Length: 68
Image (cartoon, rainbow, N blue to C red; front, side):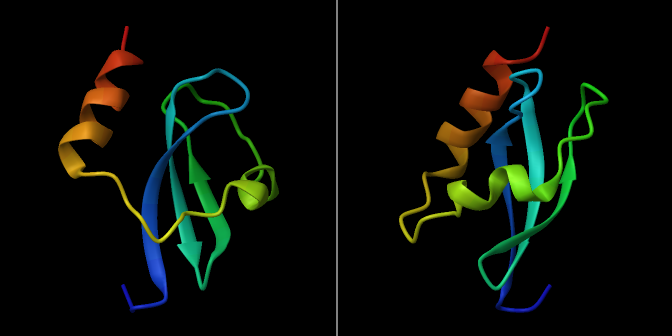
């Protein structure tokens, strides 16, 4: 991963579960949803990651709440 690449956990717009979104230079390029949904990376464009990233603990807590 280069400095222009990052991975965030975002809410899937289809099923509401926590999906992994790969970003390159602030643009979403890949999405992996554990629910098997196939949302396009474009659906996350308006949700570009902010400079203030929540702590890993809070992100995992939020993700765990979506697990069934």
